[in-house]
Amino acid sequence: MLGVALSIGVLLALAGRGVAGTVPPDCIINTQERARMLGILRDSATQSELPNPSVLLALSLAGDKSSDAQQLLLKQIKETAVEQAKDMSSGQVALYTLALLSSCCDPRHVEANGQSVDLVSILQEKTDKELANMELVGIPVSTLFSVGLDAQALCVVGAGGYQNAAVILARKLLSSQEQLSVDNQAMMALALVCDYNRTELQDVQNLLNTTLSEVANGFLNKQSEEKGIIGNIYSTGLAMQLLLAAGDFYAPRVWDCTQPVAAITKHHLQQPMAVAQALPALVGRTYLDSASLRCSTEASTTTSPQMDPTPSPERTTREVGPNITVTYTIINHLRGEKFNCNITVDVPAGSVLLDVLKAAEKADPTNFSFKTKTTFWGPMVVSIHGLAGSEADRTYWQFFSGQEALDEGVGTYKPHNGEHIQAVFSTY
Ligand code: B12
Image (cartoon, protein in one colour):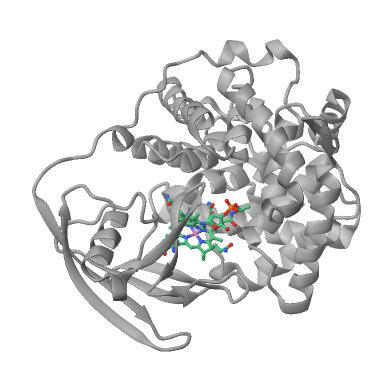
């Protein structure tokens, strides 16, 4: 088991870019903020009903391998893998693969409760379907973000035959860079860095080189235009992973990594999923380092003091105060019978948007009934007024404040007094 991780580690180190040891100290988050973020992840590991592979991956990459929380989560991840991997999306299987690798477990042979599963062959099967769809209709079965994760995981474990994944992702990046979110670009491009280091085909290298240079320079431009933010606060950590791994592709240009580190530190991310995606880059690591971590038991304890997690004010207290008034509109001009309904509700100041939706539903259930599903990012609104989004149809309920799309979900976004929230049935 260890042998697999170690031999992959040697391969990556030989090909290596973005190794944590080479990161300037200014690019590493300060000890206090690191401890706060680890506290949120450990808390989430012990409290979540469904084990979150992104949290395990972040804990392991941040060197928190021996904490009780990490060990508990690892056990749950193995149990869930043997029971459910076949029914997961490709991106989830990829995250499980990276999480297990970073925890020094062989994803080809996961054992729990007397059962075993080969995650890599499941991932290969699912990735083949994603790539076939991309070749056929230009979009994956699930999301480009997931296909980026798939290609990273397959490359990092050394599964053969996945150079075409990199080529397909590179072409997509070159043809639609402007339309792709920073999150998508970062995850797709990270896979290309891994493949670039493994391919000997000159024309593939040229394609990957051009693409990586485009993406990385695009990120550097965004960072300088937006004072350290690349995309938004939630995509900045993922973009940093790419900039850490792809240094050769923007050289001789210099990356001032202190800017995004300062921006993320200042924001004090609270959501476990946001912390899990940001933390790896803030300790100088990328998902591509998953197979190259030291796997001895003593490796991590010295760098990760066990801290009592600092309770997040958002999760423990609710600001009390006067009521605020919020106008809420739901619009469907896309499918079936069109509708446009409006309501104004009062909710206590400090309420999240979900409370507004509940108040609207209570006041007028015929028009404003809605359903949510639980995800690692919190509740996602899947249906309003009886109209449900669909993965097959690529439709969803998109939320706006005025004309501006929200960059948080209903479980965390806090509207202000007089705000006009719109939910618009849209395509993606
Ligand atoms: C693809 C994607 C979507 C797709 C999901 C399509 C699908 N069925 O697969 C669509 C377009 C539907 C979508 C919608 C939204 N998204 Co989105 N999405 C992403 C993206 C780029 C990749 C997710 C993914 O594939 N992960 C990989 C798979 C393997 O993991 P997963 O756990 O199975 O992923 C699922 C969840 O992430 C969920 N999901 C996706 N987005 C969101 C957003 C929220 C708030 C919730 C609760 C769940 C959720 O759908 C994924 C697929 O099932 C992420 C980027 C990121 N950094 O994670 C943003 C991201 C998660 N989304 C974000 C946002 C803000 C939204 C919206 C609120 C935007 C809006 N203004 O309406 C809406 C959700 C509204 C609602 N109805 O509740 C933010 C969340 C930030 C935060 N702090 O909450 C992210 C981080 C992007 C960003 N950098 O701002 N999204």
